[in-house]
Length: 578
Ligand SMILES: [Zn+2]
Image (cartoon, rainbow, N blue to C red; front, side, top):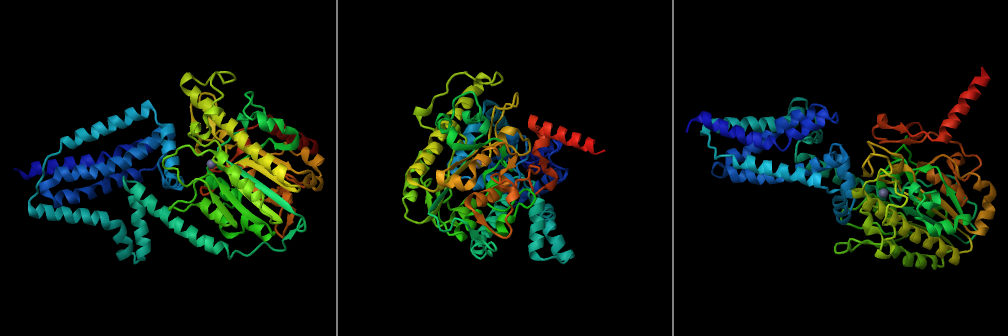
């Protein structure tokens, strides 16, 4: 056998491994989502897989098949994500996935699976198999083999060795450099992403310990300190207010809240700063906002504040938080006195209905503590929507009041989202009714962590959320307040009633909550409270604050009639001045 021929065969192995990284990198480069680094690293890092091929000459084809299985599995994740979202599968995406539980991830996959995606994956798999079949056993002469192995090892280790040996950098820094270089290439995107995630998680656990040492809010006064009081915060999930009849949607999706309309303060222009649960709540439940996204790490959170104000606190959640992979939600829940985790055994049961929060909620209401603060975290209308309601709530089945752009293939999902909202109406109104019955002096706020696009935007043909391609449906959230008569007396309710049109980003929520609770402290800012006469309207930013360039003014991006009118007014006033 000529050595030339062997080089050619080895070249085929290299091309085979390259197949799992390079085409993807080229596509995302063409789509403008990556620079050429991804392509370069795919070309360089794919050579690594030739090492076992050269070391095991007897089993070259089998070895290649085994490696290919790993590369194939990792790369179809990236391809699928790109197919569905039109975005690169980056580490931050991994973070979001690891923060969800396995059942949720399965539902997520189920809801995005389509004929197009399956066809693409089958074609990709078939092509991988054909390429593998074409491989032949390869044996290089010892000298050539040794030199090749040496070169590949050097090439692979170079990103690590260069800073360590030549630049005299630390071991840690050098490892980070290696990570950076490996990350674009399959399967390192997932492996490195996971390592980074674990690192963050470790910090989170440390953080919880540190949170207990966070200096308390200075000069905190609870004006209601001597009153017996119950405050309830209901955090919803993926509910877009424009799909609720309470907010004018033509389908009667919230009949029970509609019935209570006169007793509710229904704020109609509130958005979430981010379209993802964790990222949104990091701001909503802390002093963080789009300009200072990390305040939740360094300052007291809403849970800390309530404790400091003398409240006994509860966290009742139907979201899975108590997994081995601890989560940010777990950290927040652990900042309260008592936790009820309802979503533990979901392995056999995909349907985990929010109605399960009602019993533990009643129990918490019956706690004789003088001041109680109860957080209820719902699964709400999270996809896959048909899992979010019992069969008896399968009410919307036809095309009635469905926009004409929703086609027949999309109708079922469109309807199941409305059915999920109908069931959410039962849960939220049920919580309000129970509070009303039990408590004499109480306040309740319900909002959704973020919205959800379910064919709300004409011709977008998309359901879900995508920060890279925002639509109003992903951000507009219900925000309602219920107050007992004694509570509303203190609030000057008639005046607050005129505030419901206020343009508000929920990133400032902690200020509204403190104001509602009658909690004052040195650094509080009532101009950020939606309930306060001193309220000042501020620009509402959306986008990823870790990439400040991506921040956009929501009202400029999606100008409402109200916004345009106010701009016009500003221009007129300005003209008056000259
Ligand atoms: Zn969410």
